[in-house]
Image 1: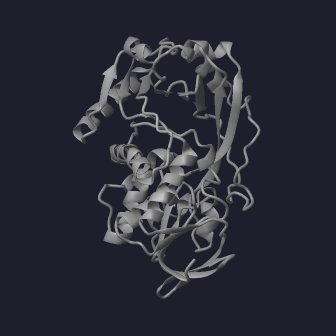
Image 2: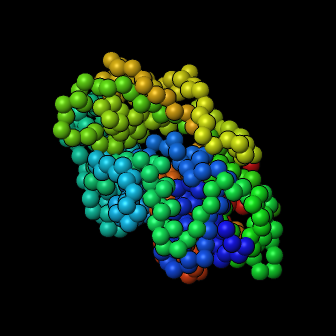
Amino acid sequence: MKSHYRVVVIGGGVVGCSVLYHLAKLGWKDVCLLERSVLTAGSSWHAAGGVHALNADPNIAALQAYTIDLLAEIQEESGHDIGLHMTGGLTMAGTPDRWEWLQAAYRVYQSIGIEDCELVTPEEAQRRCPIMSTDGLLGGMWADREGYIDTTGTVHAYAICARNRGAEYYEHTKVEELIQTADGWKVVTDKGTITCEHVVNAAGLWAKQVGRMAGIELPVSPLKHHYLISDTIPDLVDLDFEMPMTVDLEGFTYLRQDQKGVLLGIYEIDHEHWAMDGAPWDYGMELFQEQTDRIENELICGFNRYPVLQDVGVKTWVNGAFTFSPDGNPLVGPVPGKRGYWCACAVMAGFLQGGGVGKSLAEWIIEGEPEADVFGMDVARYGRWAEN
């Protein structure tokens, strides 16, 4: 590890590794990433790894589409298997308002060049996802570029690509203090002090503390999030295709295949904050006990939407922490009043949005502005009124 770099990225999850990769890809080699534990520690290692096209903000949807296309590229460039399964995906509507919104989103996608989507009837959706009940559904949208990846493999692929392009990363190196100087920043670590022009806060569950090191109160908080993995489902054993990534917004669930069972994730109504001042420094590879009482209604919806779940057991529960902003979108860009301090925080859907976030932030740092319209992610959209 050198004593000076042009950019220091703090945090070795998918977002930090993507920022590092894109900085190197755009020609800045004198950059490094510091991770207090190991790559993926925090949220990345236990994420469900789903990728899908739909977002209420079409600009963010376009960045998600960029990320999805990038995944195959980094797998090839790194030579590291990321477990990419492009199954296609369904987003279903169960109310007239939701169906109207899906149809409008489809037209917007066509206008911005996302052309691998189509509207489908409930019957056509069931043909593509035969374990799904169509009760109450009005229609859906199919997208070819949806599926899932191996989260740990993907983080390491980003890191390998970055290193192969000249960047550096260091595990077991904890940032303890940030000091602003006339020329940039001093990054004080447990392995020594580094000077740099730019600091990127990609610290995930620890973004709050890394913000406070610079005198910034970021509007972020970790929340708990559940998913389950089922035992083998007999209906899937003899199929010659995988279940598509399927989102039931009225039912507050998402589903994808996992071996010969499924992963069912919950969009939690009765959400629970955790460690609002940031995760403990010694946290990283832990999970919480499942809280089935808190997500009972969503589970009922999920088990009714996919009745085969009523006849098999649950193999694994995952209840882990992810960092959210107040509106659920990332916090990206320069922090007003803190020259050279950049955010890449609260990227709740890191494997879906991380590629686009890394690209946009690297462009912003190097070229002065991102190519895409990232207002929906700009950290400057919040003022002090949003501090928690």
